Length: 79
Image (tube, rainbow, N blue to C red; front, side):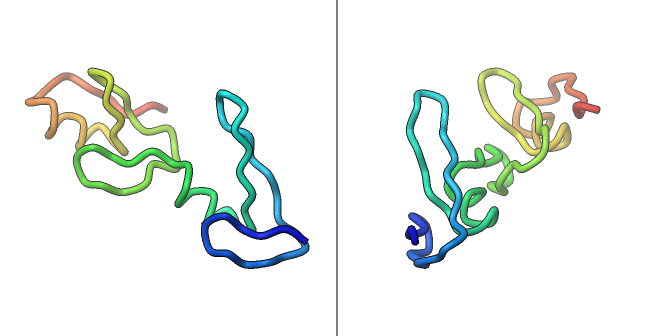
């Protein structure tokens, strides 16, 4: 059994995720993986688990947050 690096649960069905650069992370649930690895919206602070929007080198959960943070920049959600 392996231990989840987020919650510390010792669980027989953990899984490993390899990040860019080769770092390996062990989790017991997608919830823990998202908590550790998903980017955070620079406007509202929520975890971005969908496509999100990237503009000006920043990550946002949606076009509304990107537009609000980037002073009215013309941004659209990814379809």
